Image (tube, rainbow, N blue to C red; front, side, top):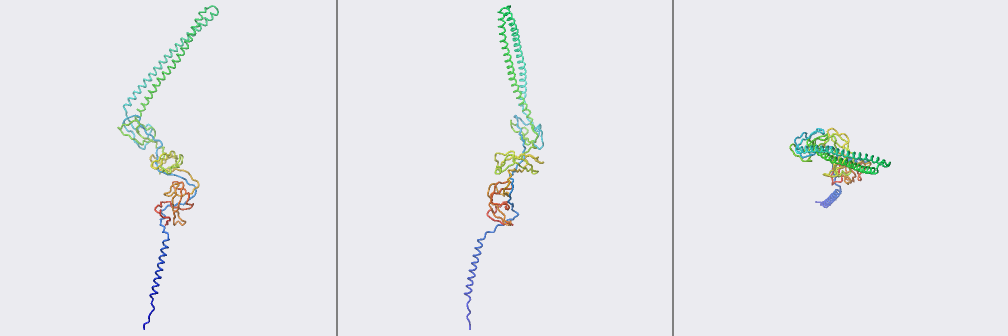
Length: 418
């Protein structure tokens, strides 16, 4: 006899429902948990980043720029007259030349003629001056002789009047004689005064005439000196001890008055012309200390000039060199210049970030205590130097920050360091 077995279908169905519900709940829970998790921080090789530690203490503010060495004493030699270049005696080079060294020889026929004319004009003026001196001296001597003759007559008439007056007083001489001698004395006295005036006027006239002629002589002498100087300048000389840097003329070339013939310089006295970014040049002042790296040694100097204009985003600063220049230093040598702005006594500072500018707010990655992660932090910067920058807020002493370029992680607030 067959016995009917109990059916398991209902039980299996219930189990399947329980399994499905449990799976759905588990999946929903896992999904919800995963959705609430933060994305994994990207990994960065620790050896590829540049870090520094925030410090407190003195900070030397400096600015740096590239530049060249240039001579302090540079002279352009201009042409004093229109002329033709006949010969080039010396060409630009590193050798030292003396002030009398001839560089270029030129010619100008019209100048030679003008020189002869000026010479003869001067000789004629000097001859006229000598003749005039003889003439006025003769005239003055004649006038003095006339004055002396009148004075002699006056003295004799005066004596005669005294005799006639005494004779008249004694009753021996006639009154008419005394009166006549008195009149002659008074007339001659007037004539003596007139002759004295004539002598003085003649002397003043002689001086004025000689001075007038002397002025003509001086004018002729100046003209002759000018023509002679122009003639001598046809042989162009260095004019100073130094090197010939530039010679912008060639044989056969005609040059005009004032045209530059040569540029000379003293290579032993140099200064550095440093190009400083206009954003960093605002605090530069005269007399500030500086150092110049010639790549063959470092020398000290100080600021002697600041260009008032900005060219291509830079300001030219001239630095006078105080130390002896190292071997190999010469004009147009490329150098690095560093200028000391000020020494801050007690500030919070760190190495200068790649994109950190003065008085700006930037974000930096600050390392955690384990140095395994870095978190983005907002930092306010103050005054900056070449390699350091002042921290106004956002960091504390001992914090480690990443200073290298992290622009590729701009969308990340956290990174992991391997």
